Length: 261
Length: 282
Image (cartoon, rainbow over all chains, first blue to last red; front, side, top):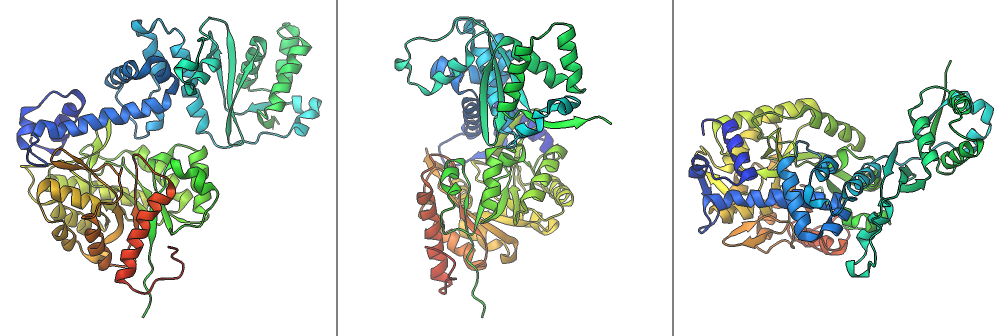
């Protein structure tokens, strides 16, 4: 080992792969009297996988529930090998789980797993957002004036699912033998995940409200522009618009009214 | 003669959030938090930290600065740590004498390395860079190790003393780690502690280890073991005002059990410095 950089490269490689490096092992004096140099490195290798699996277990509780210990731990090991952590922050570990699950042929019997993983990721991201109060309803009630402003919405995670993901996610707290039926039939479900005060809220909405809310979130001009577009292009009935505003108001999802000069 | 201040503390863990939210009376003057757990969140962990900060001093304790990394420190990490420091105004900012992986593969571990002149140069540069950026001295913790290296040119304590001397940093003396490494590698823990100048010790850690095969493993999953207490006593006698604390990271029991370990440390402190400040609650 000619330098610290070289030592660290080789050491990290052995921790990750478990493949012994003779030159490295030759320089190691292991703790105690009975373990060998390779076993001493193995302490760190075991610790690495245990730590990363624990993180994935925290982040993907419901995947663990569905797969069971053996398959979940194997999935984690495969994920860890495919996607080593590059961040100091373990909160962000597992970001590629959705795509990873989509590529796993053997998981086709659980077609809802990647949606579930997406749901769990969104929940964690939402959890780490700051507490949020939102604008008071009264400020939005004077509609004509407020429609001249851009409605800046809170951070909302929009999840367009093919399964009843919320119901599937809720199973994770139950004992397996107490679950009679897995709600795994395909049917569209639309969820909003957002923070209100200190709590993460999950609200299921109808398809049209979901679409309109997405449009409001993306829209950067005055609200009146969107309302006119919806009316002219017949994209939403007055009832649908009313439903959307009701969601925004009741969940305090409008953070700021921005009036353009 | 001034009565020295007794400075007991504890590592803040999520399992105790609910209990601490009720703002109970404790024996503690401060909490230590793992910096990384609060650097990228503004959710519940951050809110709890702010609440606790209203009643206690806070020490920020990092696990990922990677002071012994040959690749250098992460600018993003330092930037985010600095933001947290500015918000919390901690009385101590610490990390470990170790490396935690490579930029391409963060191993999230406290990894050993050979104590060579080259390593010393790298660690010193990294510590100076961090201190320069954070605008404050660092406190550096000795780690438990499960191997040493034939290529080492000095002992761990010689290396540490060199780092402290060249950087102006001070030591977070983890007496559990001293004990674990002393058993694992066959040196005297008391000798280790003896070599560190009293004014270079800024904090003390206490924790419990696990016995594995024929070596000790630093798990923080048990009460403090009997052989560790004399090392604590030796260290606290160097400077009675050194903040000391108990950390417990696995199989975490209820708050009162961890606090009882802190109280054991307070009793040792009292035995040595007879007159107890009234505000220390036992």
